[in-house]
Each structure stands twice: as structure tokens, then as C-alpha cells.
Length: 427
Ligand code: SF4
Image (cartoon, rainbow, N blue to C red):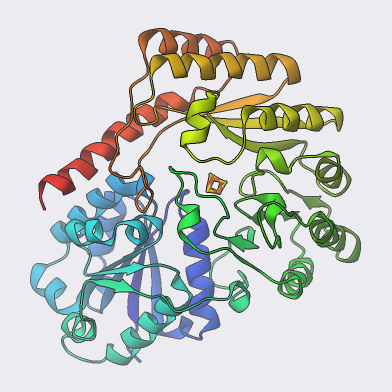
């Protein structure tokens, strides 16, 4: 049986998605139909293009990516088009994309040269695509046969997806990503893509099934994906369900003997107003992390309100103080460069950073605004740091008050905004 080359863009940043997509492939029993290849750089593509095993068979190039990878994706598409023989490419190769960037802005995926752009959750569309590729594999014009099944290069899939459908375990990909227990968010912070999906939860029985398999495989470090850690299983934002979260963590630890459990830290950060004696106590009792990640994003009250965060700076102070009392350290995220942010606001945020660090010993992580597709701020652009604010930020990061991640963020945001603007200019 002829196999299809599934050629996957894989970086440190998108490995959780790659792992999950491959678990779906395996669970749906397509593993025997595909030869898997991975690439990250242009050199990897060149090597693949020189392999007869790849160039002689149908190829699906698959990219699942977020906007921060936009420049790498564009470079790699150009390299694929340069390295693969154009006549073979036009018969046998297809470029497909999914993930947060094309979900938020599928038209930009078309402009980048993807043949198919899958918008939305993958649990239905990905196995459907794999099935179709397998059906068309033996046919002479693989590419044409596949593309003729789609009315448009943008493939929207709005069928509901229960989170329980797949567990992230398989045998063909070694990484087991953190368990996704919540998708979507009750809040709608204007810079964040998470809320573009409705809130849904993995059931406790599915979570227990995961713990059992985790123990069977002798894995030791358990993490969760949950956009707002203490909103797991909440019916509404104002009513968190701490008992259920405690039961989940207690079950992992006591029934399944999993020793190293992380909760309330990436990728399951907590909103500040959800930290109280009860939730801090749960982390302290069942988890191995001594740090808890909290989103503050700005120290300026007007900006916090305009971002529609749904809490004030007082909630950040309360969270830091509570965590400190429980022997935990708050790790607070701040973003600079929001559209129309003034230097005065930046200086207010810097004063808040210093205050929070001094009072509670909290660690401060600094980021820089990146416009994300599907959010209200996608078409807005960053505000540069004012001179005084930049000097202070440099001083604080050199002095260990905060990280210097903002500096890389500025460069990344400049590069990516340039690409996004070029899409706009080539309508
Ligand atoms: S920033 Fe956090 S709280 Fe706000 S929408 Fe995103 S995930 Fe939800």
C-alpha cells in the first residue's frame, strides 16, 4: 500500500499541538497510511526534498501554528516551493494549515500560500482530512483530487467538539502534552484569543482515565492546560468550584500516586480574583509548584478596565499577599505596548511592578503587545515604550525586579506587524 508523506512543521512552540494531532491520527487508525517527517528549518526542508522516498510519494505539508511563528512559517513555505520540483508539486503535494493563527485569520493563510486553511477546532476536520487523503492516495493527481473536494481554501468547521473525545496518549509521538481540561474562557480580554472559543470542560471521568494511563506509563510530572485554573468546572465566572478542583488534584496524588503535580502555573495560569485562602491552600497541599502564575497585564486602572480584564489592581495585590502567606510566590505577567498606551501609563505600570515586587517578593514577567487574529485589537498596532519608561524597564530587569522578555517581544512584534501589514497592503 502506498503511503502518504505527512511532513510536519514542528518547533518547541507548537509541539503540544503536533502531539495532539498525531494522537488523533493514531486513535483514528491512520498511522499505517502515513510516513511521518518533521521539519523546523529551511535546511530540514532541503534534506527532505533530496530524499527519493519523499519526492516520489504524495506529500501533505502540515502547519499548526500561532501568530508568533508567522515569519518562520513564511520562510518555510518559500523553501518548500523552491526545493520541491514544481511539476511533481502540482500533482502530488498539498500545503495545509490550522491552529490559532489561521483560525483567527484564515484569509492570511490563503495569502501565505496554503491550499487549505482549517478554521476552528481540529477534532472533526483533521480526521476528515486524513480519511480523504487516504482515499485519494492511489490516484494520479493527488493534489487536484483532494482540492476538488473543498469549495474554498478556507475550511470552516462549526460542529461541536466534546473535550472528552481524545486523550493525548499514543505510541508514535513521544511527548505527552499537559492535559487540556478547559477550552475557552468566560472573560474576553481584548488582546487574548482564548475567548474566541466557547467554554467547555473535560469531564472528571475522562480526567481519571488520563491519570490511570499516566500511572500505567510511569510518567511523573502532571500538568494541565486550563486558561483560568480555578474556573475549571465553573458554571459561571463568579462561582468557582474549588471542591471539584481539589478532588481532581487529590485523586491524582492519592489514588494514582502521581507525585509531581503542577497547577496554577503555565499552562494553567490563575486569574487574580480566584486566589484566596482556599485555592492557595489547595495548591500548597497537592501541588509541587511553589510559584503561581497570575495575569495582571497592566498596572494602570484605566488600561485594565479598557482591556476588559474584569478585575482591578487590588485583586492582584490580594492574590500576591495570599500566596505569600501560604509560602507560595506569585509570578505576575505584565504586557507593555498596548495600542494607544501612553508613557504615563507605562510609568504607572512600572511603579506597580516595583511595588508588587518589593511588598510580596513576587516575580514579574514582562511581555510586549502582539496583535492576535480574531481579537478586537488585531488591526491595532503596538505603542513604543517611551524613553523614560524604557530606561526604567532596563534598570528593573538588570536589577532582577522583572524579566527582560519585553525586549524580545518588541523585536517579535515589529517583525510580525510588518508581515501583517504586508497582507493588508496586498489585498
Ligand atoms: S487573558 Fe486570561 S482571562 Fe483574559 S480572556 Fe484570555 S484566558 Fe481569559
